Amino acid sequence: METCRKILQQGLQILEISYDESQLEALLKFIKLIEKWNKTYNLTAVRNREEMARLHILDSLTVLPFVRGDRVADIGTGAGLPGIPLAIFSPYVQFALIDSNSKKTRFVQQAILELKLSNVTVLHSRVESFQPDAQFSTVITRAFANLQDIMRLTKHLIAPSGVLLAMKGQSPDTEEIESLAVPYSIIQLNIPKLKTERCLIRIEGVANHG
Image (cartoon, rainbow, N blue to C red; front, side):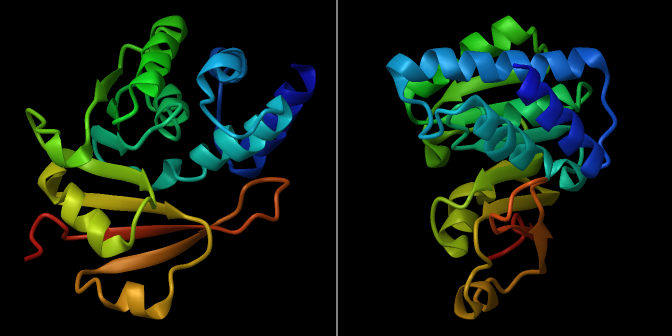
């Protein structure tokens, strides 16, 4: 894991994210857990632990500066990404990690227990069926559909002053982005040591739309 440690240390420095040794150890333990469970649960197509450090952990942490407020929902969290890395670095923020795949939510529950993350809960649910006790200040999702559909499916989860963060690979086409009819910004994300294209669509006013 020494190579992973160096990748994470260098990446966090490039991202200008301060960390302590316990946070770094938690990230390394999380990589080990994904690697272990991947053998039977097929959590992610990435098998190499160094690639996990870059493509999963550092990729997740690129959105840390854009998280708003103290209640965050990670929709379609899969193996706990980006929710778990973000929760490790935001101990005073409450995270709800939601996925409709029961195998993946079982893994995430185990990871929460082993990493002793008291600020994370996991829910096995489809996004449209999930009815939270209170709305969220930030809803994060990897772009699993077009942006209009994501807004429609997550609208009931977002507080009036909340923000929707959609993580995408390439920037959306002009037609898709112009159809939003709400304030938005496109933020280019740079994963340290990777040339993979990533962007974040930050959408405001979802709860008040339509």
